[in-house]
Image: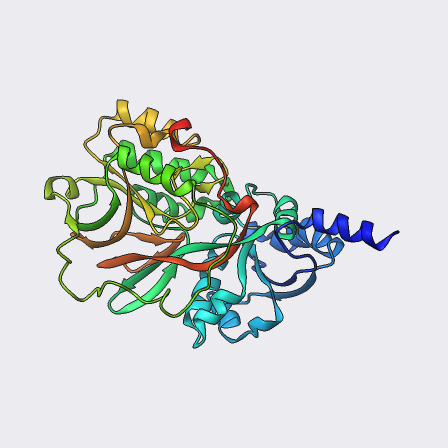
Amino acid sequence: MDQDVVKFVMQKSYSGTSPYKRVMVILNPHGGQGKAIDLFMTRAKPILDAAGCAVDICKTEKYRHAVEIVETMDVSKYDVIACASGDGIPHEVFNGLYRRADRAHALDSIAVTQLPCGSGNAMSESCHGTGEASQAAISLVKSHVVNIDLMAVTQQGKTTVSFLSQTMGVIADADIKTEALRFLGAVRFDIGVAYGVFAGHKYPCELAVKYAAKSKTEVRDYFDRHVAKLDDKTSKITEETLTLKYNADSPIPDDWERLERDFCDNIEVFYTGKMPYISHDVNFFPAALPNDGSFDLIMMDSRTPITRQTPILLSLDSGKHVHAPEVQHAKVLAYRLTPKFTGGLLSIDGERFPFEETQVEVLPGAAKTLMKNGIFRPDRALNEI
């Protein structure tokens, strides 16, 4: 075949990206109810091989093993870290990169993505638009490198990073307390949420927020303004990118807003997120954008009548729940959450964290991933949802 033709075909096939990616696959053999290895080997790896990717595979052997792997790996050998797992391994990978002495260089050098092989595949659903390992592998090969925001979570002076979400209340209980029902698949989450809502559970706390957009009108304007600026160009990650703006041990800044006690004492849902999809059919944060320098906050009051909560819960698949007047939806830059009771649950990226005072702030453009067209699924205006 004429070399000019070959070159033309390759340029068209890999427009805006690079072929022959060097991929470190971190595989959780226990993911997906023990099916992760088979899913990766039969559905994802053949596609990576056919695309000429150089693939190294590392299997995790214990909890937080991926953190250790990433802390010591030679990032110059790879273009991509692909997590063949659920959302737990990406959380560990981002934190492994963040803990390195050369963290800015490491986060700038390598893209982190997910090949969905677990029970929770929110990263793949949001970035690749699929929960199927084979389709995600094709997306890995063809997608562009994009900067994404991370969130810095500080508890008792220790900071970790979150790429997906933080939640307290009904959602956290549904996520963590139903672990024994994993064999039911995604329906376990629905069962947990329904139980908490119908039981009228409330989760009193103190909450202070630094808003980027507070009202629904402001959120829509913010979304429209920032979605118009999205492109697939990457920006360099430096140590300044990773520097925290707010000291968690200092008094709450004057330009933050303390939420009213009456509402905070009756919070039912407290959920913040950076990616739109939390599961295949739950578009919980429809206004989420990859690198707009903010993250979404959604809250609900336990005193909302069941007759109003039910249609809200039934509209989670479409993202229309954010338009309900009973749902508080904002874009935020930071918050400080202080629980007023003990024994509660705090879930960060689906992982259980200590239930204590927590401060979170956005780290704009602090990591890189692979994404179709440089935007989350779906690509549409918020007012069309």
